[in-house]
Image (cartoon, rainbow, N blue to C red; front, side, top):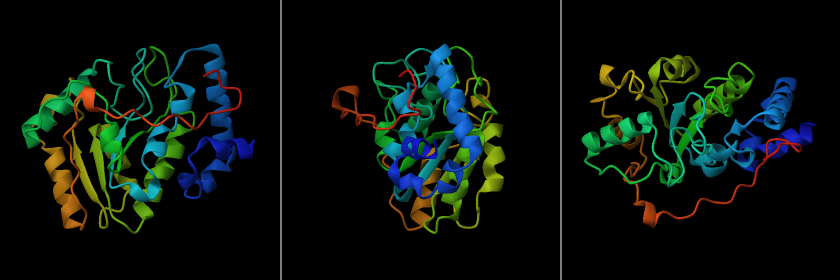
Length: 248
């Protein structure tokens, strides 16, 4: 079982997270998700569970944008926080992110919601919980994912090379205690959800703040402008799996 657990996580992250992958809670978590996939529709599809780690290698991370759990609507979640595949209508929180990007940096609102180009520049788009049952938000919370993703945050915080952590909303802000704020930059604000965006997310200028913090730490800024849908390069094929008996 331990070998199977190691196979689920991209190779460059395995060494960083080896102490987690070998623990019983992680094996129990994989078994739970496998049972859920056999009985229900679970998002994202099995091969995309660890897409954020696969798309942004550990040493390449310059920014971490932390989400809560995956979108629970059909066809939305694909393993990158806040992102949807090209051709899927951007959910309200992502619409608000794009509005703030336009107001902050003047970039046009894209004609899609795919954030892969950010991930390819070192922006780790990580949800705290990596799976969800269709139509049931937060249905996989408190099953072990939080312990695993907390370990990711802590591993990045221990890394000598500085990065910027982006914490939107109270749920994400609670993770501040895991981060070395002397070494790394932190950008926080209310969540971009329609329920809270007007309480401080709009006008917070997160993208220019992130780039300023990167520059202060000797790193190049992120190009937040997204290409048009027609210009997008195909996403790399999925190579991981959640468990040998997953149904996707």
